[in-house]
View 1 (spheres, helix red, strand yellow):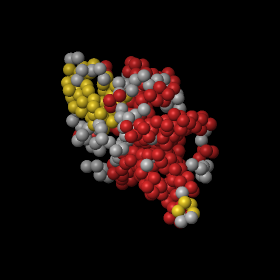
View 2 (cartoon, rainbow, N blue to C red):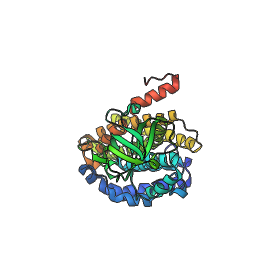
View 3 (cartoon, rainbow, N blue to C red):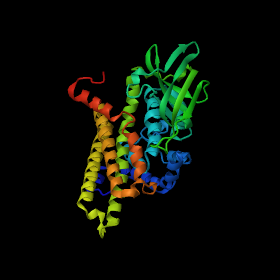
View 4 (cartoon, rainbow, N blue to C red):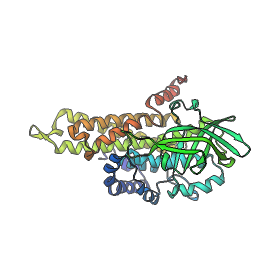
Length: 385
């Protein structure tokens, strides 16, 4: 995509280098696999060592814990380029970073950090995040999963649904109700009473592993509770805020991919003896797509700079996720329309992005939930209840 509004001039050298390295990885190593992976509904796990080698896991964490110490804008640009490839690829990296490594770093003990973070950064350990349940999606406070204190630790019972990485994860960050409020736990896959199963027959995020986590009298050692997660649901939601930031950038990346495909197609595809890009209706769609992408890029970049100054509010991040996912979905629909029948072919990639974005607009806070977050921010009135 062109840089008509000068985004390049607003980036630092190391940010451009990270973006370009991920862009090359996606183009050269991921894209040759994605059509087959999407059709077979599998995540290309063979790329995990390479993803780790590029330093994409734990990207913003300090080097002492296996991270790269990168800034928020670098992380955002990485998410953008990963989702130019596929939402499933960005989801894998996003979950590992924002929903597994972040809570361990933020709320874990030094022992937990030492045990898990470097292994997660190297891709030797894969994690997932268990908050959503079958009857507790947009209302996580109504979760039924419970952890009871015992002489030996904690006894966990319940289940979590729609969990990215569920069946390939070595550990799960699980949120459960206790007598002390909602608390976070590190659940290891070897623990008796812990199992997972994959969700099949998905038509969206097919190149991503999604499943259910099941806990039946699963005994957790006392030291597997996140000791600094003492604010209840607020701590779980803080992890979602981290994830939503990356999703905003990722959705923009998917939109950019769809726009580039549609623009190139419009220049080459001929009907009525001329390129369809010469038609007014086609140009109108392309201009609208281009304008929305530029606005999303600028908003993401601004929030990234604020985040680096620890000044990015929850409301602003909700704004970026809400508006970015919505505009990306609309852009994908315009692109599919411009491509006509070819728009439903995986060879052209647009339908894959379109299907994925139907999930992106829902997960980590549905569109309506972000409206309510922002409505409360604007009016001071809580409309959730």
